[in-house]
Image (cartoon, rainbow, N blue to C red; front, side, top):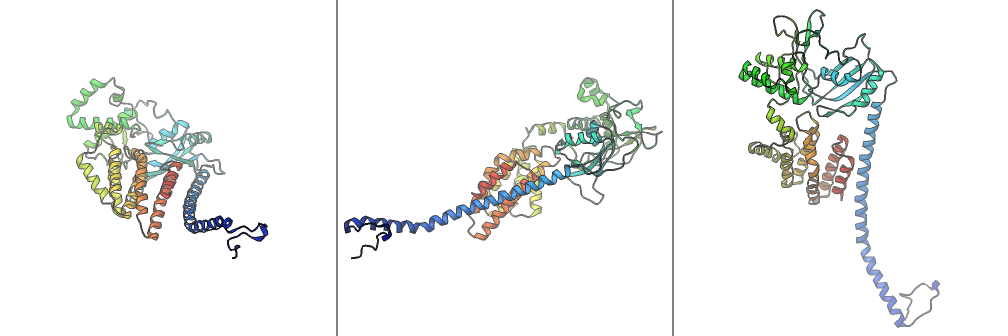
Length: 457
């Protein structure tokens, strides 16, 4: 009987043992065979785990590279060109900001030589934001403005300020802080215009949204109840600084109040008015209306106050309409998603209710295609939360704590897909949305990486 069948190599120099001594050796060898039979399963599981980690690492590396490229692009734009320019390029300007507002915001850093906003052309649709240029008379003033106003918020939107190409400077500055506020002795503090002998009243919308709504509320009630209401209001609030525009005839706010009332009485609407210069009275001065805003502000003072504080709720009718629009988002069709997104932004004064409706529709979606369409809806809402619409920014804040349940639903939908190719396509589309969020800087990069890891796990 050959006992080397399960024995050890001769080179080890072990002594031959009896059959009873070799029995444990046989048992250990069979145990090793059983362990070897389990190796393929363990190796397959390990390879699948390593593949997930590699995919996640690849995705995170791609996001990191895109972020670095965007940072380099922004840093190149922030660098001053070789020429000693004093011109600043301003991007992401709110659509209701005009040249007068730019002068007021940038003028505190120094004298301004020229201001320009690239408004949409006549046949071009309205844009959510515009681009403009502010050229200072001195380099030091431009540097101070660039440093202070980069990423500063104006009407709820962060400004993107960088150096622009040099432009010729005028002999005299266009705007110097303090000159426009000084009294001129003319009615309504009118100033010299194109013709030096004809004073002009440059009407500008108040930059303070609270003051603007208060002026609109006053105009509406004076038109409704007549001049006696205005006289009674002045007698009661003449010491209230909020109603200073009623009694200070030389202030810019009073000029806006007087023009707004005259405009409505002449047949203009709340959102559109004549742009031509006109004479309100028989004699000078000439009145110059402000630029028409793409996104008009609210006129109802009470509703505006409640919306600012977020203490309003959607009516049952509005909630039902929003619910139906969100439920109709079953595929990635642009029209259906755009309709639901637009109404969600309009209802931004009740952000928690909007998010509840969207998340509930997300949970009720039956197919992976429907869930992916709902994700695109969430992405569109987050992108438009930067629009110059009252309380739109609150939608992004309300969505952040609910993203966990959104991606829990996406993970379940991904696991329920049997076809390997369809599952891979679904995974790529979800990760593509996260990559876009990282580019938009919707949330911090760490938060987006957490969601990506949760989905890839």
